[in-house]
Image 1 (cartoon, rainbow over the protein chains, first blue to last red):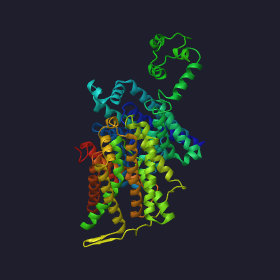
Image 2 (tube, chains in turn blue, orange):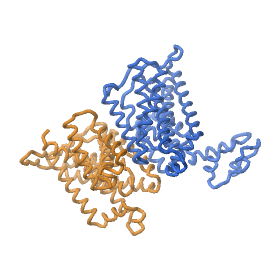
Image 3 (tube, helix red, strand yellow):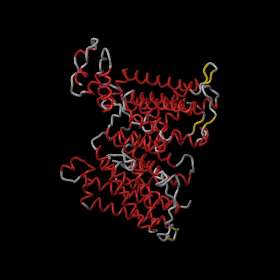
Image 4 (tube, helix red, strand yellow):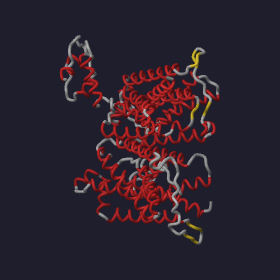
Length: 334
Length: 287
C-alpha cells in the first residue's frame, strides 16, 4: 500500500509538471524541451532554503514558486528572438546549463546534491504517506484550476492568438512579447511548486533528477494525453508514470516507451489520445452521449466542431436552453 | 600546451565535429528538420564497426560495414518516419526525432546490444604515426585527418560537379519548385540521408578508435554539440559547418588549455549556442 501511495504521489507531481508545460506549449504554442530546468530550480530553491536557512516547508514552497516564476520569465527571453525549432534548441540549452550549474557550483551541493530535507508539517502533524499524497493532489487540483482559469481569461485568448499566428496577434494589438513571458512565468511557477513538493517528498535531490531526458518525459506525457486540453496531460502523466512501475517489461524499457510514444503519437495521432479531435475521445463522447440519462448537457462548440466537422449545431443546443429530455443532435446522428 | 598540441587538438576535434555535423546540416538544408536522432545513428555506426572488427579483425571492413549499416538506418528513418510528416509544422518532426533518439539510445543500452559498458576498440595501429619536424601525429589522429580530408574532397566534388549535388542545392533553395522542374525528390532526399548517415557512422568508428572506447550513450554529447556547430555555421550551409566545426574546436581547446575548468565543455558550448541564437540567429557566418 505504501508503494501505491508513493507512486500516486509521484504521478500527481508529474501531472502538475505536464499541466504546467501544457500552459506554455499547448496554450501559448511555445515548445520547450527544457521544462525539467524549472522543476529543478523550484526543487533547489526550496531545498536550499530548508537546509541552509532552516525554513519550514510552507514558506520555502511559496518562495520556490515565486523564484521559479521569475527565473521562468528570464529564461523565456530567448523566445522573444527565436521561434519554433530554434526555441526548442534554446530551451534544451537552458536545461543543460541549469543542470551543469547545479552540478559544478559548490553552493548547490555539486554532484552530491542536497540531502536531509524534512517532510512538511501542518499543525504539528507530519505529512507522510497518505498525508503527502493529499497535499500533492491538492496542488494538482490547484494547478487544474489555474489552468482552467487562465484559459478562460483574456490572457488565455491572447495565448491562443500567439500560438496560432504571431504576426496576426501583433496586428490585433496583442503584445506578443508580454504574453510569451507571461506564459513562461506561469508555467515555470507551477513547475517550481512541483519541484518543491518533489524535494520534500524525497528528502534529497541530485542534479541528474532534472536532466534533459526528464524534459522529454514531461513532453511525451503532454503529447500522449493531448496537447492543449486539461484532461490530456493529467491522463498522460498518470499512465506514463504508473505503467513502468507495475509492468516489469515496461519498467525496463521506460525510455524506449517515452521515445516510442512520441514517435507513434506524432505519426498517427498528433493531437494525443484524448485530444479534441482524437479517435478515442470522439468514441468516449459518443458513448457518454448515448448512456447519459436525463437532460443532455450542452455540448461545447469545440467538442461539436471536433466531433462533426462541418456540421452546424442545432440552434436549441447552441442557445444553451435545452429542455429536459430533449436529445441533442449528437445522439440523433448516432 | 605547445602551439603544436593546440593545433593538432583543434584539427582532430574539429574533424570529429565536422563529420558528425555535416549530415545534420545536409538534412536541415533540404528538409528543415532538426534531426536529433542523427547522434543515435552515429552510435549505431560505432557499434556495428566494433562488432565487425571483433569478427574479422579488419579495420577497413569494420569501417565499410559501419557506413553501410548506418546509411541504411538513416534512409530507414527518412522513409519510415520523416517522409510522412514533411507537410506538418516543423515541431512535429522535431519531437519525433527527439523520441527516436531516446528510443534508439535506450535500446542500444540493453545488455543484448551494447549494454551499459565501455568497449575497447583496439585498432590504433592501422595507420603509421607521422613524424614531422615540429612534432608527431599519433596514428589515430592521422586516420581522422586523412578521412576528413577525403570526405571534404568527395563532398565538394559531389556538391559542385554532379547532378545529384545540383539536385540537393535546388531542393535546399525551394523543395516544391525543385520537384516541379523534374528533380526526383524522393531519391535525392534518400541519398542525402544515406550519405549523411554513412558519414556519421564513419565518425562513430573513428571516434571509437581515437578514444579507444565505444558505449551506448556516446551519442549524447555529439547530438547537442552538432547543433551548436550547425547553428554557428548558419543552418544548412555546408561550408559554414566546416568553418564552425574548427572554430568551436579551437575555442574549446584554447579555453580549456588557458582558463581551465569552470563549467564542463558542453555547458560552455550551450551558453555559446543560447547567446548566438539571441544575438545572431542567422549564425556567425550567415548572411
